[in-house]
Image (spheres, rainbow, N blue to C red):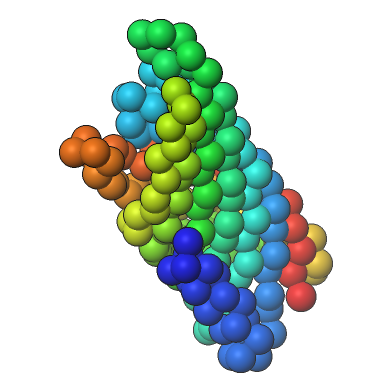
Amino acid sequence: MKKALILFLLTCWAATAFGADHLIVSAGLSYLQPADSGYRGIYGKSAFYPEAEIGIRLYRGLYLMGGFGTLTKNGSTPDLGLPARSTQRFFSAGLGFLATISGGLKFKVQAGAVDIGYKEEAMETTVSGSSLGWQGKLGILWMGKIALGGVDLGYMSASDTVEGLKIKLGGARASIYVGFRI
């Protein structure tokens, strides 16, 4: 949690410290197909979650990006059918590049680090932790003078070991978002 918060705060600090002329802020809905088969067996093959992102233009089409998302799912244990609850949070920081296709239509590529925190409650037991990994995104973005909107496809990946069992965090994702720029 500490390293995720530090990543996010550094991104926000850089947004003001560099004094660039374009700040991008967006919020949207993301769709995740979890990478871990055990997770899919308990909580389902997909999940929707809210996400927010901030970006500061460093030079021409190069941006420093930071984001946050949180996901909560309810499910049941495979053998006993007892209730289970999973919460994951995603802090990301990295670089993004926007290239103009035509007018306000832009192509977006983004890569960087992601800190995935997790907490799972089942059978009166709680397991929690976090792991640092990577993420990548490709997308199409429309930018007006103030408003923006777009869609991204990507992947985020991290792993951790819980009681001797390796778990995969993250997975394939798609996002749709709206926002503004200054």
